[in-house]
Amino acid sequence: MTLTTYSISKLAAEFDITTRTIRFYEEKGLLQPTRAGTSRIYSPAERTKLKLILRGKRLGFTLEQSRDIIAMYDSTGSNVEQLQSLARNINQKRQELQVQLNDIKAMMHDLADAEEKCLAAMPTQQKKSPAKTSSFATQDQTINEGSTP
Amino acid sequence: MTLTTYSISKLAAEFDITTRTIRFYEEKGLLQPTRAGTSRIYSPAERTKLKLILRGKRLGFTLEQSRDIIAMYDSTGSNVEQLQSLARNINQKRQELQVQLNDIKAMMHDLADAEEKCLAAMPTQQKKSPAKTSSFATQDQTINEGSTP
DNA sequence: GATACAGTTGACGTTAACGTAAAGGTAATC
DNA sequence: GATTACCTTTACGTTAACGTCAACTGTATC
Image 1 (cartoon, chains in turn yellow, red, purple, green):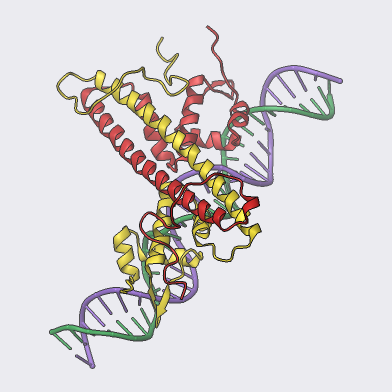
Image 2 (cartoon, rainbow over the protein chains, first blue to last red):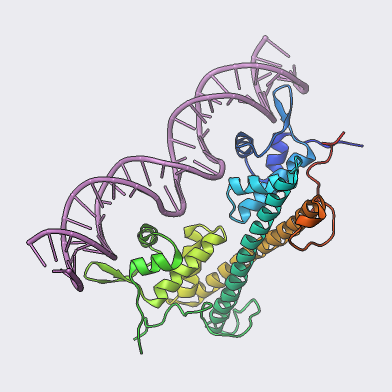
C-alpha cells in the first residue's frame, strides 16, 4: 500500500490557508503530525482532521468545538460511560446543527423574497435570475413598517 | 393601530444577550433606535434587525456580513445599478449558504455514522437513540487508518 | 561555497466582539 | 427624600484566531 503524506505547505496550498494557521492548530492540540527530523509530516488522517476543522470554521464553530468533533471520530479508549457521554455529545451537536439548518432555510427564504422584490423593482430587461412569489418580509416581521409616512 | 416598542433590557432578556451587546451593535451602526429623552426605544423593525444579526451570528457571520444582509432588506434608495448590485449580493449570500448547507449535511452524516459506531460498541441495554447504517468514516477518509497495526 | 528555498521556533501585534467597571441621570415607590 | 430599578456614556480589559516579523536550520542547486 502507498502511504500518502503531506508537507505543511502542501496542505496550506490545498486548503488555501497559511502554514502559521496549521501550526496554530497543532499548538492547540488539534493536529499531531509526525516528524521527519524537525519537519512536520501529515498523514491522510491528519489531513482529514484539518478538513473537519475547516468545515467547522465555515459553520461558525470554535476550535474547541472542532476539537470535540474530532474527538468524537477519534474516540479510541471507550468504556461504556465514555460511550454514553459521547452519544449525548453527538446528539447535542446534531441539535445545534438542526438549529443552523433552520436558520439557513429561514435566511434563504428571506433572500428569495428580497431578490424577488429587487427584481420586481428593475426594468424588465436587466433581470437575470429566477424568483418565486411572496412579500418582502422576514419570517415574522417586515423591517420597514412605519418608516413611510 | 398599536405600535409596540421595546426597551433595551426587554430585548436583552428576550434574546438572552446583554444590553452591552445591543449598544455595541448600535455603535457599529447595525441598529438605530429612537430615543425617549436619553433612553433607547426599539420598534418592531429594529427588533427584527436584531433577530437577523443573531441569526447571522449563529451561522458564523461577522457583524459586517450581517450589516450587508440588513442592508439588503432595508434597501430604500434604489436605482437600477444599486438593485443589480443588490441582486448579485443576494446570490452571493445564497451560494455561501449553500456551502454551509452542504457542510451541515456532511457533518450530520458523519455524526450519524459516529453515533452508530458508538451505539454498536455499547452493551445492548444502554442504547437510547436511533441509528442508520454505514462505517465510521468521514465523507472521504477514515480518521484512524494506519493507527491499528 | 554562495544562493535560494522550505522548514523551524519564539515572541509580539492585531482584530472582532464583546465584558466590566466607573460615574452618574431619571422615575417610581415607600 | 431616600431607596430601588433601570437607564446612560466613557473607557479600559479580554479572548480567540490568527498575522507578522526575527532569527535560525537543513537541503539542494548552481
